Amino acid sequence: MEKQSVNNTDRANHEQSIFRPEPEFTRYIPGRFSPSRCMKLQGKSMTYAIFLFAGCAILFFGYDTAVMSQVNNNADYMQRMGVARCSDRDAAAISGLVSLWFGGFAIGALLIGYVADSIGRLKTILLGCHWGILGAALLASATNITWFAFARVGCGHLNTMVPVWTSELADPHSRGAFVAVQFTLAMVGSKI
Image (cartoon, rainbow, N blue to C red):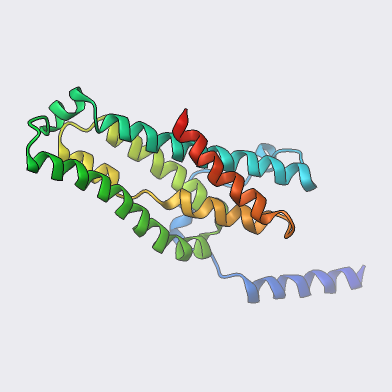
């Protein structure tokens, strides 16, 4: 019994030397760990379940891309945003919205490594899901091009973190296949 106590102490000391304490703001992120909410899976079945959920995130990224390309060409949308006159200014405004989306990806991709190392992969993905819900609500309620532009910035959070997380979980001999499947799902999502 004493030997087990020493091993637990050694493990706790080792974990303290490896892991940094979480920042204070993480207590405000909903979705704390609870054993009652955990799936009763282990091993490969748990890994495949995680890959299934991760694939859904990437699939919806592809879907979002396709929807936005259709929305940008919708006459009602163009009228609402004040870009229906087919002028050079209107073309620049629409292309600016597309650029903001990709600029948001760049910002999200550059910042996500620090965030994920600070609060963990799961909380980072959870935070990205909440950010996505907020962004969708802002996009759906946009009544002018400024509001819409504000709602578009901030993408890239999930699309950077999910492939990293799944590649960390995958077996070394199948890592490339899972990442390739995720990007295939992005293309499939854009065709739905």
